[in-house]
Image 1: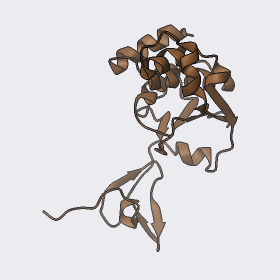
Image 2 (image 1 turned 180 degrees about the vertical axis):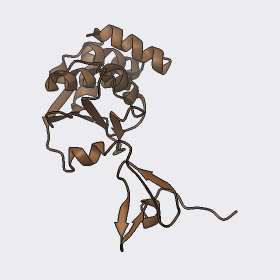
Image 3 (image 1 turned 135 degrees about the vertical axis):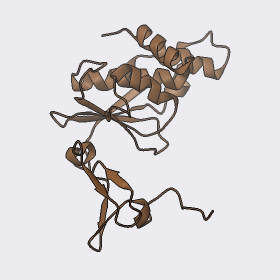
Image 4 (image 1 turned 45 degrees about the horizontal axis):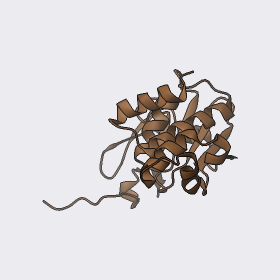
Length: 193
């Protein structure tokens, strides 16, 4: 398994610099993989990571775990929280990892030479013992793992707009198979030209 320094360097290369949230992503990924007892970065699709925010933390998580949105081993459910759930798709075990509320304040204790808050986070998050930096909460999923993973190659067509729907994300309403946008769950509305 790569060292913390190697993972941070890989994340910095991928992200074009290193920032505190990438460090959190790397450290969270290490904690989640260890808790599940899985080798990371993974080369198979045994681990699924559900991330609760977008941005820098995702790059740290991706480098550390080997999970990617494009490989369907990472999902982004943007709750605006720097947190991630790590799921073993074979056993169903899951753990949610998030920074402790005190981590920002404690970071300066681990980086007394820091010239700014940002630098104290960057250095402190790297040096802080894991038990002070993150909390691990074993969880039970509220939706089935099978629903999250879906079936490979599954496709249907929306009976209203005609667009293809994959991954069992359709909604059946009044006997019609519809996409989420057509049942009012969309993030967009078609504008008249």
